[in-house]
Every structure is written in C-alpha cells, then in structure tokens.
Amino acid sequence: MRTCFATPRPTQHRSRSLAGLPISNDAVELSLPASSITLLAIPGPPPGDINADGLVNIDDLPGLVAVWLGLDADPHHLIRADLNADGMADGDDIAQFVEIIGSL
Image (cartoon, rainbow, N blue to C red; front, side, top):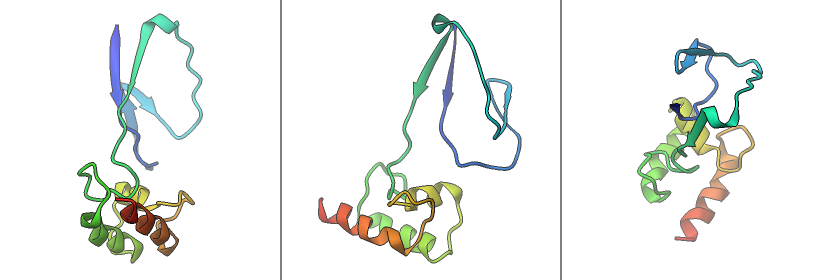
C-alpha cells in the first residue's frame, strides 16, 4: 500500500506531480479499489494566519496589510488573506479580521 501526502496549493501554471504522476489543472477521473489508497488531508494554516504560526492574531496584521496593499504577492498569503472567501484579498476582508480578533 502506498500512502501519499498532499498539501493543497494555489493554482499554478507550471508542471506539478504527486507520487510521480503529472497533475494538471484539467479534470482527472481516477478509479481505484477502495482498499488500495489511503488519503490523509493535512489542513494548512487558517484564513488570516499570514505568518503560519497556527493562530490568527494581531501578529498577522502587518502581513495582511501588505497583501491588501499589493506589496506581498505570495500565493499562499493571498489565499489566507481572503477572509471573506470572495476570491480576492482586499479591503473587503478587513471586517472578518476585526471579527476574528474581537472574538479572542
């Protein structure tokens, strides 16, 4: 039995592979017996956790502001800075960050 570990990553336009198999942005249909594969999903940092310390707190604010101002284009940061899940990291996400910080 072969176990593969994969971390979701933002869509990129370069060649990728998993366990030696090419991965594209196209839909792929895969049929395997249920007993032949084990999938372990390991979640990444939560939305808003720009510094990836596992917490969303005031320490993430400088990184979030850098993304929202367009000064940080790291794809992982862009995804985590999109707190309202509208596909864009922008000023519309500020209210969600304030809500998260206010709930601490």
